[in-house]
Structures are given as structure tokens and as C-alpha cells.
Amino acid sequence: MSLPEKFVEKYQNILGSEADDFFASFKEEAVAAFRTNPLKGRQLSFENPIPNTDWGYYGKVSGRSAEHVSGLVYSQEPAAQMVAQAAAPAKGMKVLDLAAAPGGKTTHLLSYLDNTGILVSNEISKKRSKVLVENVERFGARNILVTNESPKNLAQTFDHYFDMIVLDAPCSGEGMFRKDPVAMQYWHEDYPAECADLQKEILQEAVKMLAFGGSLVYSTCTWAPEENEDIIRWLLSHYDYLELEDVPKINGMTEGIDMPEAARMYPHCFKGEGQFVAKLRDKRRAQPSLLSKNVKSYLKKDQEELWQTFADKYLKVKLEGQYQTFGNQLYLVPQGLPDLSTLKIARNGLHLGTFKKNRFEPSFALGLALRKGEVVQSIEIDVEQFKTYVSGNVLSLSKDYEKGWYHILINGNGLGFAKVTGNTLKNYFPKGLRF
Ligand code: SAM
Image (cartoon, rainbow, N blue to C red):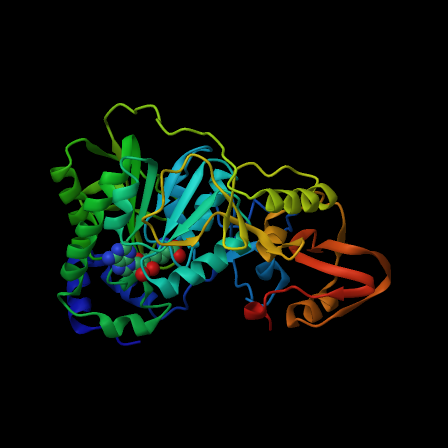
């Protein structure tokens, strides 16, 4: 790998005697890792845990494995795992992930929230927001809304609303050079300064959405001080109510440049790729939330009946939240949100299913979000059956079952619903995901 000349010069100056070790690390392979998903009812044991993390493991997972397809694991390199770990939102918090696709930090934040509070996960690019929705659905959380908005539009709806905001900012991506050398093509000497302008623009909107007393976590996957410490100093000088909090330095993380509270990850010190993370707090006294928690039903009478008939027959849990329809689709929307009518929504909470003529058909997302035992009838499939299931073909079962909907399980975790008649299992695995 041949690094840009100006990049080499710059980091020779910044790192001094450490520079040789830093450049040597680019000759080594990128570190693969993943996190397990605590929202899934059945956990599996994995080897090579990342020290000092709740859910991190070194190693690669295949996108075609049952563990990935059922949302039990999420691939994310170790340095990127330190961002949501620094944020570590408490249960019940209202959290915003402002630049969220493909969803690494979002799914990690969901792990901390444990189906409490609200996560608004936003992605400005429509195409990327679709990938985000897919990853969020697989993770199976019930308390998330995915928006496809500019930070400016979002700020008009969420006035000082969030207890925590995570901005994993678009950046010059130097920390990705080893994992994805294509990132080098975009790099030029002035690129970090250009990115810094965009980062400030986004942060100006972010602060408008932060509740008094809230936390702002800022991260990039670059080492450029212009996009890291300089941005934090800019924030502190423009918003005097913000103060820095310490990010604990674990696993070889180093202090920010002249900023001991912030954390840097260099591949010659930390087993992973490049990352910067800082945590700020709004010093002003928190205000009580004024949002009503009233739950209204937006369903028509016949829809209410169809859903209730389905829920009574098949579900053992009551799903708390606001039931809303969009066309003939039924969603469970998290409670306590402001009026969202001016926003582009990519996923309106948890998709429960579709109203068809005289019946309700459960969604794939619902089958991923429910745990074993939360559905009256279930069928556990094995690895061979999994291959047929994900290809979209009909499965022949070893015995006859009573006709109806069944929760399909792999390793004890939900993988959608299927309709069974006799010994034939009709596949509802989404067409776009089949392989
Ligand atoms: N947090 C993500 C994760 O962990 O999977 C990675 C986010 S990536 C570093 C930065 C994101 O910022 C990209 O998805 C990009 O589309 C988005 N972005 C680009 N320009 C933006 C802007 N002006 N405002 C907000 N987001 C922007």
C-alpha cells in the first residue's frame, strides 16, 4: 500500500518517534471483529473476546451465516466499537444517531438501551438509509425510528429533545485506509479542512437538538487534528455551556493531542483501525420532558379487529407503543415523539405486518424482534433447513402441524414467520434478502 506523500509528511510531524511504527502498521491486515446482540433471547458463545467490552469479539462473520442473518451478530471493527461504548446511553434515554448508516453505532446504542427509551437513527443519503433499515430490522429492536433527513430539517422537529446525540461524522476517512484502500483516492492535503467545514455545519444543528444537561458524542474515523481536536475546541469556544468529559482509555487508546479527555486509536497502539472519539456534556440543568406519553390508536375498527385476532391467537406478549398505519402497513411507533409530519421517515418504528383482505399478515421484522416463547407456535429449523429457507424455497417438515403462522427459529432466535399447512412450510423470507 502506498500512502499519499503529504499524508506521510503530516504524520511524521505529528507522531515523531512513533511514526515508523504507525506506518509499519499499514503493512498488516485490517482487524476484523463483531459484536453480539444482547436483544436476542438466545446467545451463543464465541471465542476471542475484545477485552473491556460487553459484546465485542475479534474475528470475521460471514454475511450468509445463521448468526448474521438472524441478527445475533453485527460486524464492526474494534476501534469503531469504542464510540458507542464511550456514549453508553443509560436505559430510558432519548438518543439520536445523527449520521447512522450502515448502522454500526446505531445497533450498538440499541444494545445499551435494551428496548427502553427511543433511538432516532438518521441518515441523509436515501440509498444508505435503506441499508440502515435492513440492519436495524435484523437487530430486532422495538424502540427505534429511522429518518432520512438533513440535520437542518431534523433540528426543526427535535428542539432540545435528545438526552444524548452521537455524531459519527462524515470525514476524510484516513483510519479506513488499511481496511479499504479506495478511501485513499479521495484524500488530498486540503481534504481534512474541507471535511471540517461540513462537520461544523452538522454540529451547529446537533446542538439545537441537545436537551439541557445532555451528552454529545463526536467521532470520526480519521486522525486529522483539523477534524478532531480542532472541532472540539471550536465547539467549546462557540457553546460555552459544553464541557469535555473523559473517555476512558482502554485497550491501547491514547489521549487526544493536547486534549487528555478525548481518545485516539492508532493501529500501532490499539488492535483495530483508526478512530477519534470525544464526549461533551451540556452543563445546564436538565429540564423535565414536556412531551405527553398519551397513546392514541390510529387504527380503523376493522384493522383493530384484524390485528387483535392475530395477536390473541399467535402472540404471548403485549407490544407497548403507538399503533399506526401507513397505507395497509401496521407499525408500532415508539411513544413520546414530537409531530414527525415534516420529516422523511425510512422506518416508522417496528413494522408489525400488513392488512390484507380479511386478515393480518405478520412481517419479517416482527419475527426478528420477537423472542422465543413470545409467539404461541414456533418451529426451530436446523442449518440444512436454514439453507432452503433463505433461498426462499418451500420446506418439507418431518411431521404435520396444525395450519397457521409459526415463528421460525434458528439457534433459538427468531427469523421471521412462516405459514404451515400439514408438513409444508411456506416461505415468507423477504425476496430481496434471499440467497
Ligand atoms: N455511524 C455509521 C456506522 O457506525 O455505521 C457510519 C457513518 S459514516 C462515518 C458518516 C455518514 O454521514 C455517512 O453515512 C454519510 O452518508 C453521512 N453524511 C454525509 N454528509 C452528511 C451531512 N451533510 N449531514 C449528515 N450526514 C452526512
